[in-house]
Image 1 (cartoon, rainbow, N blue to C red):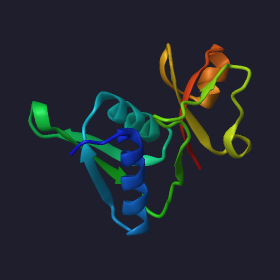
Image 2 (cartoon, rainbow, N blue to C red):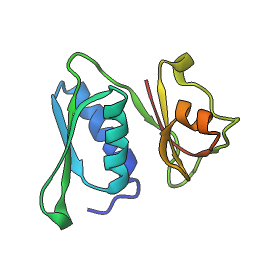
Image 3 (tube, helix red, strand yellow):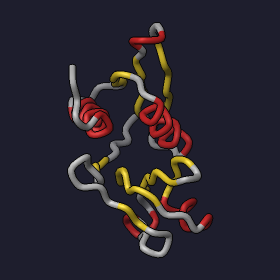
Image 4 (cartoon, helix red, strand yellow):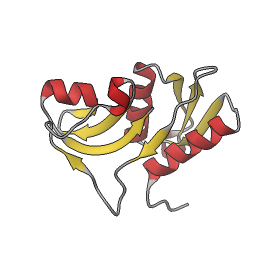
Length: 127
């Protein structure tokens, strides 16, 4: 299946699974999707991230933290890319949320990008 926005599809699958009160969610693997999920796990928004399957057709399975819903919003899209410099990055929900940026130093949260003083593409926000 051809997808124009695979990251948006991943975030939509996560939202739909949480609204349906599922404990896990699966979607096709890509390196950036795995990095986003590992970053969300590191920040405490996901319980577990695992990759399964053979090389050409791998899947990522994530487990949600019980009784904790996360709201993810796609900010940058293929038709409208949003780039932010280090000075333009603002805290999400006064620091209680999280923004994920794709920078030259890899995928970083908004606080990490501000401390390293690097900007990049604003992929999504999590609250």
